[in-house]
Image (cartoon, rainbow, N blue to C red; front, side):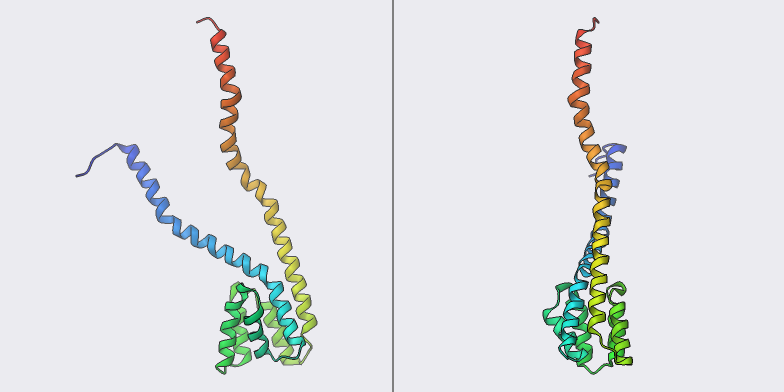
Length: 184
């Protein structure tokens, strides 16, 4: 049995159902944005842990495994995959290239430094420290940008929530008092 409640009910039902159908996509996009933010936040610590491992004389294979055990959580998945590939006998160049492709290219500068060090035999620890400082500065700049955007993003909800209260609290009593004093 179907009961027709009018066009307003149909419109409301259509809007609600489309919002419910689109909400998983919005949540997934928000989640991936949060994951990218956590990975960017963990990058300086990841570089410092890797620099510490390499400066102690560990080869790249052991250094990658050290990051898996000691590094920050967002970096562990990417480095765990790299450690497993290295353990399976894949070449360093192939593993590092696959690491560069992960996390939206976040590890590309790191991979370039490691490949250059493997090719040229240059010391890596100082370059990794410099990369960590640059990553920390980039994260700080991004955080400041988000902090500057926050008041602008909050302006519309605050106005929509507080403006009716201001109108009800100040304008409505004035109108009621004025209408109460005016002869009808």
